Amino acid sequence: MEYVILNGEFIDRSKAKVDMEDRGYQFGDGVYEVIRVYNGKMFTAEEHLERLLESGKKIELNISYPVKKLKHLLEQMIVKNKLELGIVYMQFTRGTSPRNHAYPGEDVLPAFTAYTRETTRPEENMKKGVKALLVEDIRWLRCDIKSLNLLGNIMAKQKAAQSGCFEAIQHRGETVTEGSSSNIAIVRNGKICTHPATNLILNGITRRKINELCQANEIALEETAFTIEDLKQADEVFLSSTSAEITPITEIEGKPIGAGTPGPLTRKLQDLFETEIERQCGSLQV
Ligand code: PSZ
Image 1: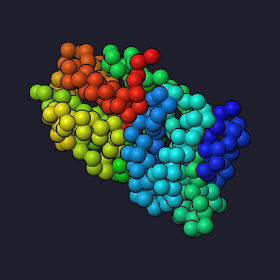
Image 2: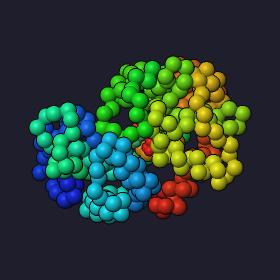
Image 3: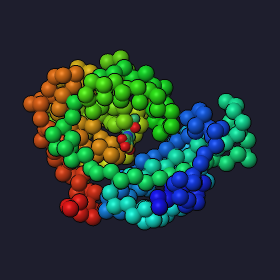
């Protein structure tokens, strides 16, 4: 049996039902998180859960569970489902009430759902790099909220998929913001550059971990916006996300980045990142 969480209770996935008028379903009115699981242990769980509560606050959705309680519930689900390598997905919506754009009253409780999924690490992509294309960032101006509304992101990803690319790199005018489901960084003259954590991007947990690792290892990193031209002329480009970890981007719009192979600084960061995973979750060797 596969267990899921529905409003704080563990139930059989096939018995879990949500209402037609759940506001997540009708309006995308909710927030979510994805946490990586290695060796049955969550990686950077606190960071993800704190961001979940912050996303909730930003849309006035009150998540009454403290981080500790959420973490414990997710840990229990991982054990019940015997998950070793994969992800945990969770979301809170503003609950079920008769369709009305304005928020329902305090009596309507948020709906909390979560499930686990087995997934391997994207070894081949991480090793060889991936292709990307450019798309105009047509999303709203609160990309810092990890909202269920993902139309702009999924339309961008679909364009990439149709062209045989792994990711769509979004830009507002000449400024590169982020990928459809990842943060983007470039390397030039030995220095990493990534968009600052403003309202225009999601401040990725992987991105934050990379920043920490750079600080601790005296690798130069600056959080400043860069242009499409900077991107195309970069020595190295990589993307970061919970599931893709650190993945080199070796080709953009059909043209190679640098030598067209993963660069030395990207590989160095991948090593440091793996060491951090192993520190938190144990050995990744099979
Ligand atoms: O399973 C997947 O494909 C996942 S799991 C997380 C993501 C993709 N992406 C998160 C994300 C995002 O959606 C946007 C728009 N920007 C940046 C990121 C990276 O955030 P972290 O590092 O927290 O996953």
